[in-house]
Length: 249
Image (tube, rainbow, N blue to C red; front, side, top):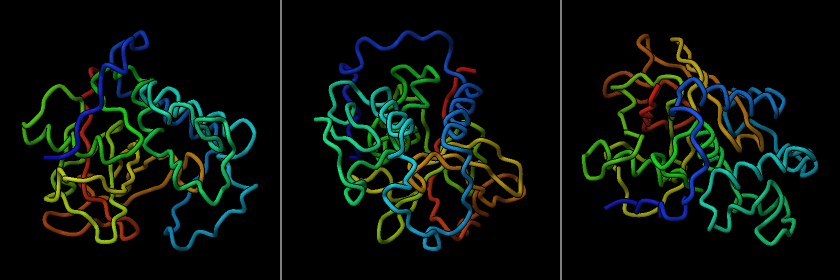
């Protein structure tokens, strides 16, 4: 049950690992990319954010569409067509209209890029969709698979650390931890935790407002997304799982 693991043969040969898989490096890489996009912060509820004109979308601007291309190229297995995408081009180099950008959503590519750049090697399930590593992380916590560096944790039982991931579903009816792993793909979004200083957690994510963007999430006194058995404190997003990342240092 759940999503199949990516084909690791496509990762051979892996880029050389210059150091061990590092929590500090993952956070630093995410912050570097956030700065490249202008240090955008948006704590408004999604429905209140005005839509950008196509020419104003950061992901399509000179110097930044290429940056998104790096996330696809380095974050995906090289045999995948997504590895040739950019912030505004498909695998054939054709510029796609901004109205079609949902098909080229790059938030999971950003997470994969950060993990590969932090030297996760073959221990992270690089993917173009968040559901892949969410499901694998749940299989890890159930003991039905082994070898991956992600473990699913309940949002009312685990206080995420810097470098961990926090995720919400984009399904019509929000998913719950008990729904994992799912039999089918589902739309989701994950952010990388930068700091967890109650009552606020700072996270950074890709393809948020067409950029790498920071937001602040309310947490409990002990750093969890919700109290035991309660809904998340953050009414803007249906956070339903934290992914504990097993860094080497």
